[in-house]
Length: 364
Length: 138
Image (tube, rainbow over all chains, first blue to last red; front, side):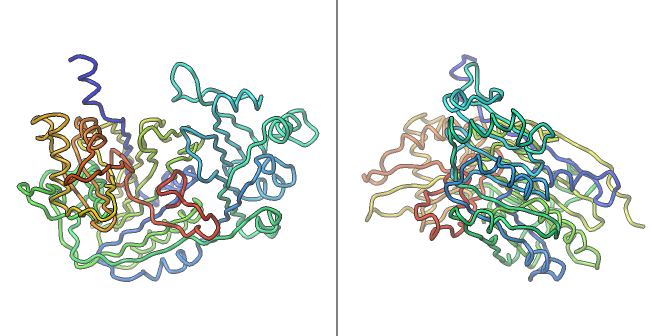
């Protein structure tokens, strides 16, 4: 086939990693996967055979914490010694540039591990003068560079050359300023808050928005926790479940016939019809610690006998985040997807699906 | 007896999805007749026929969801047909003799990837919120 014809039939690469395990196994990595995915903008919980918010989730949903939006924050303020000592070293500090496009603009992000990630275009990189590496998805002529600065490194102290160079680059050589989404988790330790630290900037505290809805007469696929690939006539595969879940979240009609003009999509077989299903959606800048708490409470949901065989927890990451899992570089390409989905079964087996796009590495 | 706990297993699927999904919005001038779901499907098929002929028009495209108020739709197409569909939508310029434009808002290989994020009310703080901009919580 000639090259133009081949290109006509190409679709962007889509990566789906499916894992299965048991939540109470000592070496289970479900919490590690959640912790490694730093920036989350939407969390959806779907519980079949449930009509109202379950008791176990009430406290988790009420205690989602706050996040902050700071307008016009200079990046050198995140590198300042006082900020590093007060927030980065004492707890987990998350910061993500807001309203920037990862494939066009400069972007900055601060990971809870203390690493500051700057994803900048070629001109900015040359003007900044800091050491970085070309983006993996930039092609033969690198047009995008990634600079990683470890703020908690022992050599990064105020008297050191490194610190002075970074501060000079970000303050005088090429000042970078963004609107940031900020969050801080410090497990109860006392100390100053982000609100008081950035009181001179335009900072506003916001709470994640929570909505509930009850779905009636929902067709749900039948799943067997041991069969990731599904068994014909007995259970559905993980890919079918993933598509079905997207259909539910997008309010797609699941009841079409193959001769229908509009849509031929229908719920995968075998399936059952449940009278009601509870859908809780949380949007905002949600930190992994809160998601782990939510996950633990969802595992406790099956502590008492329940009609539901399984429930799902879906977490979407930001499309324009410079990193996906850990420090893996994330690019937008045509979709910028980075999301994961847990299916928790009655016996606390779990399935985990992690979906990524073209300009992404395989998650750990 | 309770079934044994699931053993750890990991499968990596690269471009294994049979379908691609698009979230599109149809832009029409004020006062133009708004299409219903069957009319939208007809418009999509006509666009494919216009650019790619009868073979293009036979491409299996599903209108999974459609909201007449906002003229937003979720389309599903087989992976090999994404380029044909996207190009046909881009070049479709007329609906019932009125100017129109398809805006492709999101594209993904999995249906959960194109879930529209609900709006977070940052409007009083940021007076200008472009629709579905990056990192934006809209």
